[in-house]
Length: 211
Ligand SMILES: N[C@@H](CCC(=O)N[C@@H](CS)C(=O)NCC(=O)O)C(=O)O
Image 1 (tube, rainbow, N blue to C red):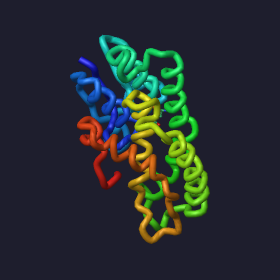
Image 2: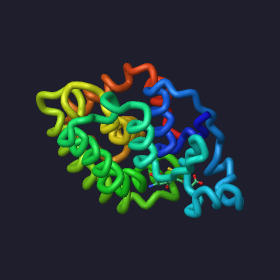
Image 3: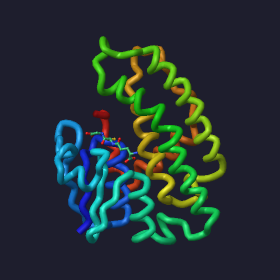
Image 4: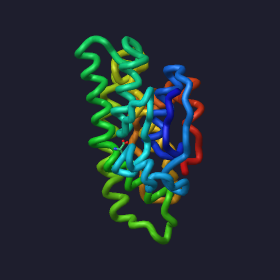
């Protein structure tokens, strides 16, 4: 059976669990990372020398890097559904996955950690505000990509929606009350996030408050 190592409050673990649930795959999840530790053990480092979650083991095949795992599971179990067959649609999907990891995550991570996991008196609000401002522009790009379509790649759910969907869930639930930070209007992104939350697999994971 598929094994997934990682704590559920990690956005990267969430992507993998969401993908497995979408595909209806039976899996065992083992808490690891953060307060659970495990990632420093020799056994874990033998699987992922970076000591990061998520990691999967599937029929003896070990893989780390969340988006690579989503691609692998989609290729193995969701060819033609989560993984588009048409090369253009597939490249389009992969582009949005790379966009999440390469452009969104480096900005969202410090904002999320600063606002959700750091006590107010310990926050570096200047750095948080700078990353937040850049993040606004990045999510405006994603909002624009959703003009005239219900999902990132055409009108059906694909693997592309998982990484950016998990990131958007955090974005829309950042605790901004009382802070000089304001989200721009993102009507298409908000509607898409609403559609994703209606999916039974996503509903299990997109819980608030964020931790
Ligand atoms: N690019 C990697 C990043 C992995 C990563 O940084 N994971 C974080 C959790 S989101 C982690 O393992 N942090 C250390 C820990 O949880 O102990 C991926 O997408 O899988």
